[in-house]
Amino acid sequence: MGDLEVMLEKFRFLTSGESHGKCLTAIIDGLPSGLVIDTDFINSELKRRQQGYGRGGRMNIESDTVEITSGVRFGKTTGAPLTLVIYNKDFENWQKIMSAKPEDESDEKSFTAYRPGHADYAGSVKYNHKDLRNVLERSSARKTAIETAVGAVAKLLLKHYGITCYSNILQIGSGTSEEEFHAEIDKAKEAGDTLGGKFEVVFENLPVGLGSYVQWDRAIDGKIAQAVMSIPAVKSVSFGNGQHGYKIPGSQFHDQMYSENGKIYRKTNNAGGVEGGMTNGENLVVKAVMKPIPTLRTPLNTVDSSNMTETTAHFERSDTCAVEACAVVAEARIACVIANEIMLVNPADHL
Ligand SMILES: Cc1cc2nc3c(=O)[nH]c(=O)nc-3n(C[C@H](O)[C@H](O)[C@H](O)COP(=O)(O)O)c2cc1C
Image (tube, rainbow, N blue to C red; front, top):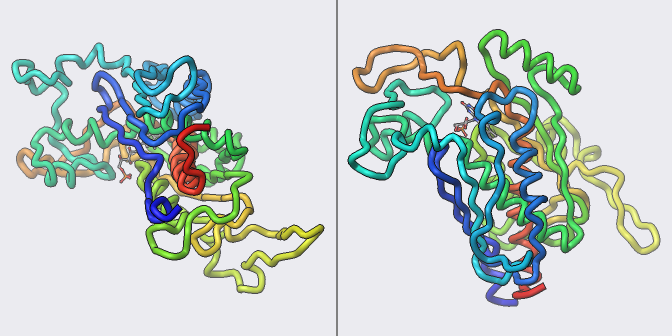
């Protein structure tokens, strides 16, 4: 156990691919052999990510499905790296624009006005790009499609250990019910505006003791916060009732412990299932806020990088609200963190 105890990553993956490139790809390393890979389940997760009230035109073009090109034989993992590919249907309209060949270079679809709220400004400085298209293509949330596919594989592993999850939308604008969400989104769309929202992700049936208190980078709440916070447009992450912790006295905040038939139980879960950087056997409850979509039909003030004059931001087909999709992506990201923790304590090469 010694080596694995200090190892931080067992289930690991990298993704690649651009918003209008040929495809999105992920390689997952570290899976045990013998895991049943249900492709229909992965595709149903991709479909969930594409849905939700307030999505833009792009989602009508794409109908994401995954192709598995390595690591699975006759429906089961072999223990070799598993490769997932999602092809971008829109690529057929962008072949020349996204070409890797130098002879295809043109300024079609180039733009130079920074979009506030996007990666454009910092990305262009960091990677020295004049054409902001080079920043947009990878910083776009399109890459969350392949992350959702990776998360679906993680969920299949977690299912093997009896762990399941779901998510709920808690608030969009000032709306707190589905009917109100739709009305808020309609109102924003009509005004050429956008909305964010608040959602929660819940994981059930987790064992006690995933994560650790012994080093800062092994705390599971820290790992989950990183995984959720780095989803494009997520601006706040909290656990359980953590966001209200400043106004609730300790006597009411902490989840008191009781015993029945030799088992500990609690009447509250304000900690959201994590104490001391470890799962405590209660449901893991992660809450997050997605900021409003930064591309507006009524564009924001900005600066054109080509001549430093003031202008308005570049508009490209966009969502009005993508909170439902964001919650699905958060499920996937958290599933990857938990799959990794499960594999650190169950270091099986085969199931
Ligand atoms: C599922 C999902 C869909 C998104 N769709 C859009 C979109 O259509 N238009 C847009 O401007 N931003 C969209 N975003 C948000 C941007 O990708 C994000 O705000 C931007 O990349 C800057 O990252 P940051 O907000 O984390 O700083 C979406 C985010 C997610 C998670």
